[in-house]
Length: 166
Image (cartoon, rainbow, N blue to C red; front, side):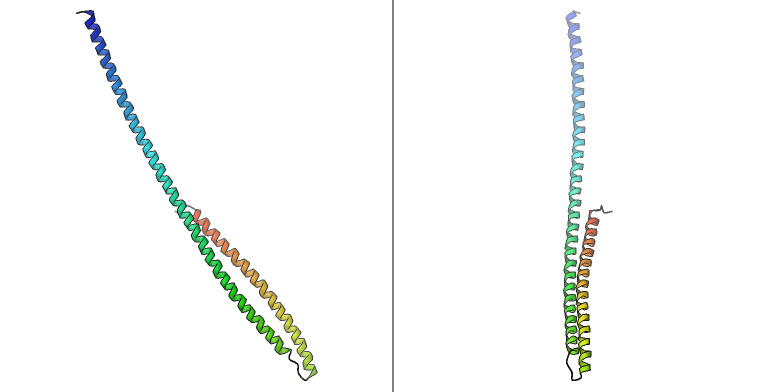
């Protein structure tokens, strides 16, 4: 047998082993690429699902805050209407007090009765003034209380909307 035939057989053998090795490497790289692509796809899918969930949760929170603001506005409107009703009732009470003071101050024929009437008129005017001041103070206090209570409840509802549910 010629040395060239042995050399050619060795070259063919080495080339076939080299070809098999390269084919194995390329198959392994392709499989690793598929695994990596699958993992990346899963990661991206999880990221998209997470973003969608976060967006939905943020939307729900914003909607709950808007509902709390609307509810607070409604409560303020109701409180304002109640305050207007109280103002009207206070005005009627002051008018009645003024009528009473006018009725007490009617002059009579008896000078002693006139003196008593003047004293009663002064007392009625003082009481009427005290009533007016009291009504104004009560109105201011009630308004401040209503605003504080409504703002506190709205704040609580908005805070509760920010907390994770569950």
